[in-house]
Image: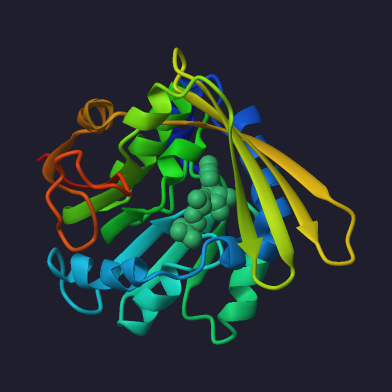
Length: 272
Ligand SMILES: C[S@@+](CC[C@H](N)C(=O)[O-])C[C@H]1O[C@@H](n2cnc3c(N)ncnc32)[C@H](O)[C@@H]1O
């Protein structure tokens, strides 16, 4: 059974400085994740990159280390980490996603925590706090992102690491027309996704429609906010985290903006 998140008075006061903490933005994200949970692993299948995450973490910490994954989803990242011996807690706001995780993890190797990351306080720290696959960008407003980075920092042990995956938004920032892509969902159907960008607020509107065999089409919409790497460093500094490495992938590829996948893996340490 999923743990329920606790909020300390301190966490409440930090979250209280943010207009949207735990509010509209999280409700939109939750509804979107609930709608896509059933097909999430078909849309985003496990790639070799995911298997590299554990090796990457072992450059920072010891085998068997404790990991807090923010936005654990269906366990696409967490389950391979558990296979590699990490002790993984995973926070998730979507009950649909947690239900998929429970199906894939009957032995309960991942400790699920049902709750909102904004203002999260589990009352303990971890060797690694991991925010993979753009979870920080799931927040639609900067104040929510500030609260998320504070939650990240609060859960990192003094000698631990924070690992945040975002993406280089250069291409999106100059996109002026909605971009439409089609993704197959195994042999069951397809998803059509349109992405529109508001560069002034750095928001991306994602509208997804699922066409599954035998089902009526189902649509879901969410709003994300992309972060420039330099902006992430500023948010991290506000939460007293110091950048110690930045890569274009989990194999420590140099981050020079030239990687076509535009991944941005940033490693931070808490400041003393
Ligand atoms: C892009 S998905 C990544 C899922 C998983 N880490 C993976 O790589 O497959 C982001 C996940 O974070 C969750 N999420 C986003 N904002 C959240 C919040 N404020 N609190 C808790 N979970 C959140 C979403 O519901 C979604 O499942």
